[in-house]
Length: 172
Image 1 (cartoon, rainbow, N blue to C red):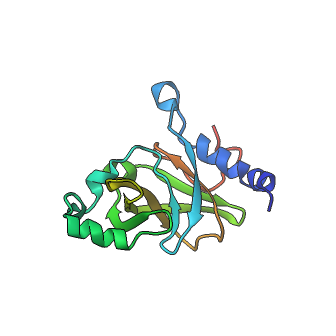
Image 2: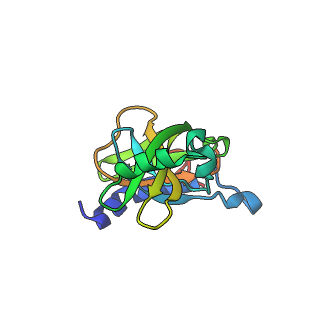
Image 3: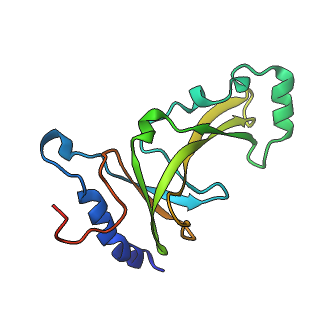
């Protein structure tokens, strides 16, 4: 399905999601974000809508590696000169307050996000190994099953949003 068709199919649900729970004044800015999302074996994977200190969440065993441990990682490097180590961690309390809806050409699903995948990348292309920490949120269907294929996740920092389209009489 072309991107324009996806947009047109999802527009009513996006409008309902963004209008639910709106109010005036300072609360009117509800922090709605749209983030590219891809399916993985763990669920729907997408970037965080807020800044996360991934290095602080990484396992302590990566904080001070010896030369022999780094040499072992260097032997595992990929064709780009990197070795990546992944771990799952619990979602931060700040992210737990957000609502997540996955939109794809197959449908709209409310996501439950309880875990994150943190990645520690060791780069061996330079004279000294360099470490980069990053990660993704992992969403699973709150009810039912996830649609196939990629799409995007609408993330709201306000309570009261829903992924279900509303009738015109319930919209504000």
